[in-house]
Image (tube, rainbow, N blue to C red):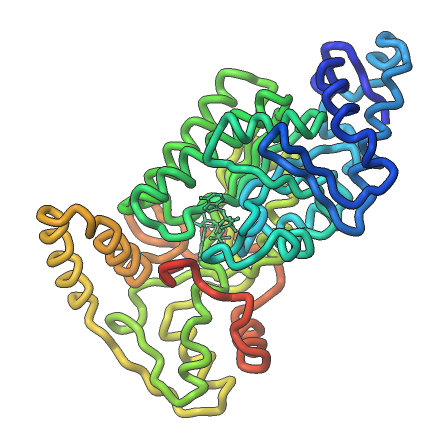
Length: 418
Ligand SMILES: NC(=O)c1ccc[n+]([C@@H]2O[C@H](COP(=O)([O-])OP(=O)(O)OC[C@H]3O[C@@H](n4cnc5c(N)ncnc54)[C@H](OP(=O)(O)O)[C@@H]3O)[C@@H](O)[C@H]2O)c1
């Protein structure tokens, strides 16, 4: 790998090099864990000497003359081999994030995964469990909600960033938390990444932002708009915005209940909404494609899984067929939700503390009635045929797996609404 001290996009400035050398020199002896108390960041990795390999490679060419390095330096990070491309992943410990980290590591990228010291739903994972889950990546424990802390953490890495990839999302979907994570923390990762050289941003968003009625959708859209503005103002900066349809976990909640003899619950006639569900690994693969694919530059990319769109009624039918049982449906009128939301909206005016409860009701209503498919702006209709497909994993295979092995690993977030 060539490294340049000249002004191309891939350079380590001497100050950063010094900071890096001070920080990591002793660790070359035992490449197990790197931590620092001066910055609110520690970088750790398990069973992976790749970070140090990359570190050495970045250090060696310092001795080379700036001219010769500049002559051989790649003009874009896309011209480098994956092992020389530094991808900063935020939201690395989420349902999709951890699969994205795994996929990027598999493809040979230098992955820097930002995580909290306690990660996962309700902080259930310890540092060690997080390290184990993100094997092969360099794990940087930091705080994405605090720009200064995050910048110090990235600075402490002592290397430039090529690409930032965000799988961040509010774990609750609450009003304030959505703005704090889906907008502010994601923006922090853009700012911190840009400060240290990032020229490409891959954002995991959601197809439902096409019809924004919820706070997390508005927060995501605000960030998407800023990302596009950044690319509009700097032609060296690019983005890929991935807007997937429903995840398997969002559709697996009734599998074990139905197995235990309960009816399959759906709203209206079971045809109010449809989606093209996509598995974690297929989506992770699509997202990983966005790091290098030139045809995904500066694009908003709606994406679903293989096959046709499925309504809740069809999903229930698949489940009963797999179980060899006579279908048993419980149809709930959607108006029940409208009534509950109306009551909560009224109460929020008196008790502002109920703001999140009202929002959760709206999220539930949204997912019960709105399809996760491309929305035709002309007709206002959702369109299965226009929703692109990717991957190979089907919902039927997923249901079979859950029936066989249980729902572990597919838990919904803190409010069990998505
Ligand atoms: N569910 C669906 O069907 C669906 C469909 C389409 C799109 N989407 C979108 O896909 C995205 C990702 O979903 P997901 O299910 O993978 O999310 P998730 O499992 O809830 O993961 C969220 C990630 O954000 C991090 N995070 C949340 N709050 C944080 C905080 N205060 N400080 C630091 N980190 C924080 C989490 O870290 P910790 O582990 O430390 O908590 C985790 O890494 C979301 O934007 C969602 O809207 C979902």
